[in-house]
Length: 217
Image (cartoon, rainbow, N blue to C red; front, side, top):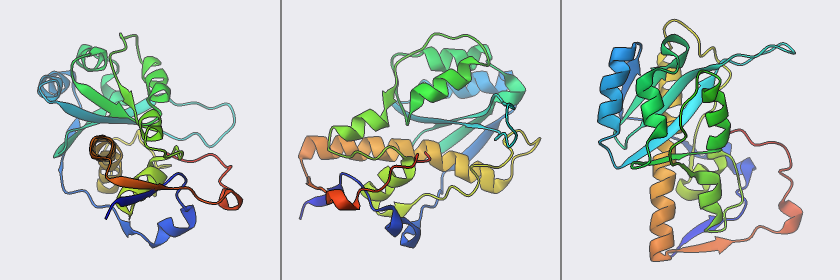
């Protein structure tokens, strides 16, 4: 039986789905020397998932810079404390790479956020919002895309937490790791479906398409 996917996933069903759990290793990077070693390892991999986090601003006119860069492999995730190490040479080298396949969601927005920390050459990246359109998925948020492909729910409970804390909470670390790791899972599954054609696209009736609000990633 072919896998059923939807052009627009019904957001009302998401709360009832099983919550995604992360069992990989999480490594927090606090110094530029740690960043050098981490980037050496990451650039030896074939596929990376990336995401960023920024401290939310709850008052008008206030703005914070990118606080965290998450870079995941299939089995572990490195959390670069950008508010502590800044745009150091190692991170700039990672972001400028053109050999390793690096995937993110709405990644151009993340790049703009990272460039506020310092200049770097922009390497090659795959944006999942564009990739999923190739199999007919129109949703833009990580939560909906993941639920569509895997029938599981990514919790966004920590999205508005303080990403500039001296020590991140375990729940923050897991949240951040899942967002980057999920990008890898989505990429691999979409590439598999494209190659094998093992899916059927279900078009939701027009009258049910009422998701005009901005999706959170």
